[in-house]
Image (cartoon, rainbow, N blue to C red; front, side, top):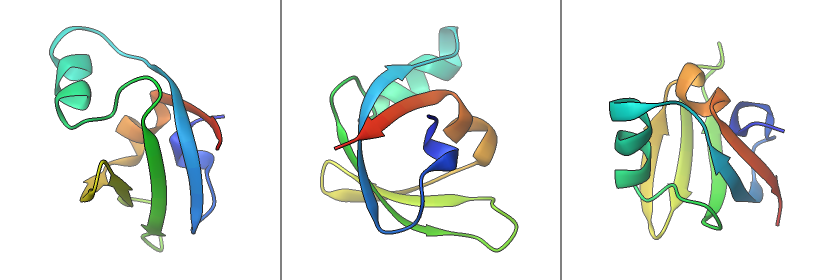
Length: 74
């Protein structure tokens, strides 16, 4: 399952960060790495962006970015 498919108020664990080069590095620099716990706080009405909490801080990700992050329920 990808991060985009996770329902609101759910905690998941990162299995894999997809993408290549600068995009992948940017996602990993935000603290989204293999094994990280992510809590999905909110999703905008049209699904973009997704608001998450990771490593104690809040982020908003575009749905295209969220699709590249594979997760499992924690």
